[in-house]
Length: 126
Figure (tube, rainbow, N blue to C red):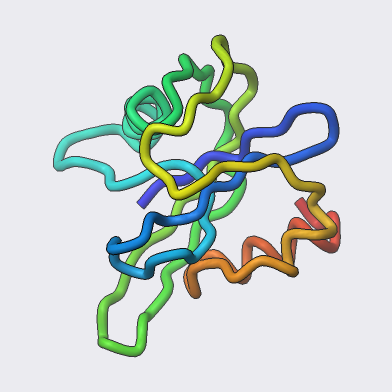
């Protein structure tokens, strides 16, 4: 899985999973699955176009770690900075999207796999 850290005016873009989706109403960073033989940065650019209708310049990888869910599913999470983007984000995949300050992200119910990244952002370690 690859996710983007999209920042504007001191805030970070997050999305809430739709009703009926797996992990409904949990918050996450835009992004998604990396297809077989796909570069993570290319996957993130594709996902951001699909989910938000933006064209993004993907920057460096910020953090990578594995997370084991209680059901035994192990996923590799890759977080990349989005250097810039063109277009205004349009919600095409979420219950809602919003811009939030890093220090307030811990107030949201994020996916379990994202919580370590959220804590680091909130403490301004990233």
